[in-house]
Length: 110
Image (cartoon, rainbow, N blue to C red; front, top):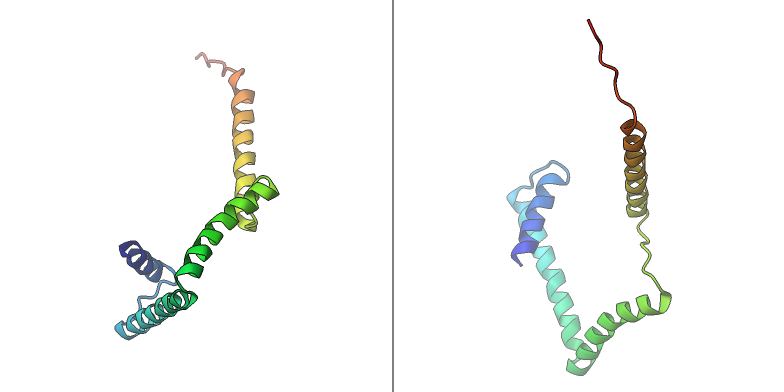
């Protein structure tokens, strides 16, 4: 809970550069509490048997889906670009290092 509050404060502070007024903070807190309450009520309506099966099913669904489909592949386009850019940067820096490694600067004599 403390992590959630800290994350909310940090995101609130740096997201748009605007510091919310007390009324806006209160309205956001009420909305978040309402959503959490609705989520808990939904879980309570499912019943204890369905709730345990649902949570086990949700946990097992990700494990079985990754086992059936093979290796896990990211669907996030920006993350994939970042990985490719990182790999290119690493290979580029290694190439640059190897290329410059054999050359020695001649000393200038006066």
